[in-house]
Length: 80
Image (cartoon, rainbow, N blue to C red; front, side, top):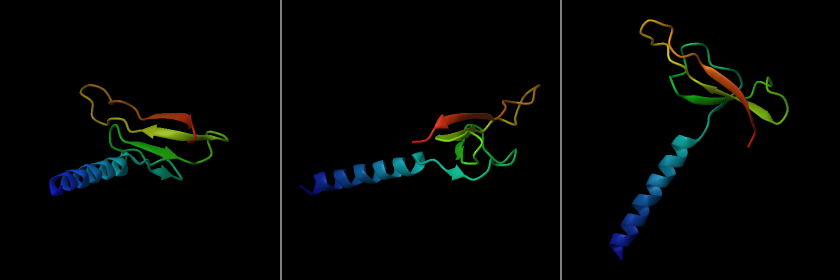
């Protein structure tokens, strides 16, 4: 019985940890260039996407062999 309780507590701890890391940050303005890590995602509520939408920003890569790397991506998505 105690073993099952221990397993249940461990699984619950893992699930809570995963949901905390999956939470989106909502910012009032887009982060300055070079401050958003490659692949990191933030939501920006600056009003530029219109009613019912929010801006999704995905960090690009500043590291490139011969080129400038991957640019930052922005798109408007529906609010949840």
